[in-house]
Amino acid sequence: MVGSVFSINLSNFVYKDSSSVEKEIIQVGAPKQCRFLNAKNHPTERGVYVIFSPAVSDYSNKGTDGNGGKACIYVGEGNIKDRLYRHKYEKRFVQGIDYEVIYYIIEEQKDRKAVERILIKHYDPTFNKEGTSKVTQVGAHLNFAKNFNNAASELKEIFFDRHFRDKKNYGDLFDFSVVVARLLKDGYSFEDIDININKYHSEEYPIEKLADFCGFIEPETVVELLGL
Image (cartoon, rainbow, N blue to C red; front, side, top):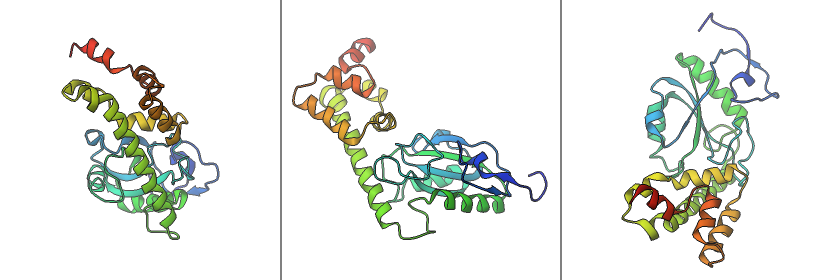
């Protein structure tokens, strides 16, 4: 910290832009980004972190994620790597969901606490204690998580379990939760994903067309290229 108290505009550290936010008194560096399940890239420093729905691409968004749930799931502070590790075993963070995370390195605890409170007020996250009852928000989040996991599991069954269960290298090529998150960010809904999966099951689509929708080449080509 340079000096004890000075003013900045909160929009400098609400990731992108938030013109509705007024000045606050903490100096914070530029935010960085990581994925919830990618533990090897979690920072060991102390700071403030914000966990978002995996469908969110605009991290200044304090509204919904476009699928009926809140964009922001949780705001926390402390040793970021340790805190994210603990969250993986808490029921509110549904297993298998690769949430988006942005974080700010802030060493001073009093500054972390202040920034944490500011961001909680700004984002109104689903799982923080402040504010009104979050029953509806939590229900929407759990419904999102159920749909998300179902879509990822069904795609995995189609492209991996049914065709290449014994081809472990193929399974390592694709993280189907990332495939679903990318489709949602591209503007597709769970209904769109279901329609494309159902077209494959009804034989209206060949597997190559479903693979193209998902953004990767069809499995026979992968196996041929890798010599599996």
